[in-house]
Image 1 (cartoon, rainbow, N blue to C red):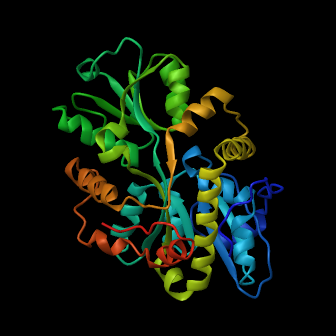
Image 2 (image 1 turned 60 degrees about the vertical axis):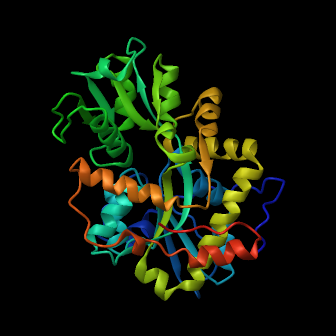
Image 3 (image 1 turned 135 degrees about the vertical axis):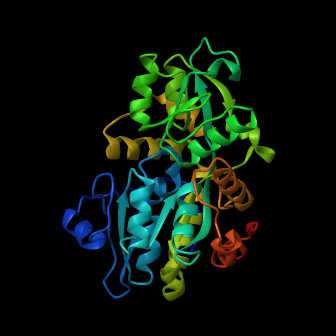
Length: 360
């Protein structure tokens, strides 16, 4: 498949609602978000069920779905695509481990949870997607980390990627926290939309959130006290990655290669055409969430992200260690090196003349 993105935009292939198909696909697996699906091709190659979130940090699938990259790649093997959007990492992992999904874009924390829950057997990371785009945003009167003592700081949910980052940072700075909201700083896990309202009303002192909520909260009068990029070497850390069921990886290598071809094509498109990609992502988010980001907010959030094929594996390993340290998860017995299978991606990158990626 030609990995060079078109310089002119293809006609968008918006995700059409196929409720009946989604019910059949997900079965009894729990899911979040609207029932979104797009499909093309014949039935000869089977059906590939791909999960993603209606988030800016999931720009890779948003662009790839809109431009038809996944559908076109799978159609070469006669396969159809069913794309499902989720709002909960827990629900997504339940669907994946339950067989309701074959692959999904998701953050490192739920990835580690799925790996641990399946005894190191159930899932594999096959590509990176997004780096960066998370920060601690506080009320304008907060000057230092010490000013947060005795205050409430929100995160997207207890045990999620940003929640672990916040707890690990506060611990390193000498603050005690717990998963019940106690300690020197009360960490409150809640939906990001609720966090925006609470921040505007002054009910919370700050929030450790991903984009576009960093930009939204700063637009609401907040300020960035700490960009999480400052905590990582070269400012890079995994925010979103592409994972698959191990069984799907082993039994359908051609379809996995199709997904990866589309993934690499979408990543290249975003990096080669950032203004067009930003517009596409904004349109897809509006369609999926019925909420439009102001142009300046979208630009600020988009510019803080790096779209990459590199899973930045060492940062996931460190995040997992942080999760154990702050007692969000039990110690992981399986070797996290086994979480990665990057050979299919590296074959595609080598053919495209791009730099290969590595595991932990």
